[in-house]
Length: 190
Image (cartoon, rainbow, N blue to C red; front, top):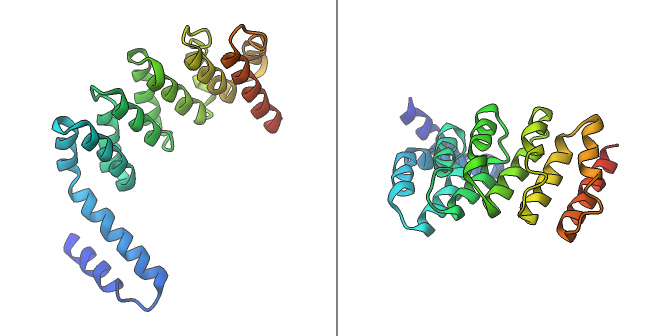
């Protein structure tokens, strides 16, 4: 079946329509990349840092089950740069499987990667994440706390907004700026 699909796509490369040729070319690229998914997983385990980061970006392009499996594997990388890139790539796919993996990663992270995780969870707009994100509203790292405030504001409902409002006079300008961003987003929706 795969040979027929590849043959059909290769034939479509000479279609009179530019849109068809472009789509066929992109489809062939994705098929080739998917065939390399297992090699990408190997590079993710043993490659140099730069190669592993490139693998994350390639996995995002591959998409589908193969790309997702590579991105989820990248969450376990030893380097924060790789994990952070994986989180950024996964934030556009807020499926239950991805959200569960991101939530599981929260206690293992700090700094920028933790901030990325909080942002990704907030961008899902899933109200059931409010209690999880609320735990980070008093994080000692002001940058992480600021990301938590904005993320939390995207999932907070009702009187939970008091958690955001009470931080408007925080000592840290980073936190006050995050409150302002959160309130700006809330005003757009309200």
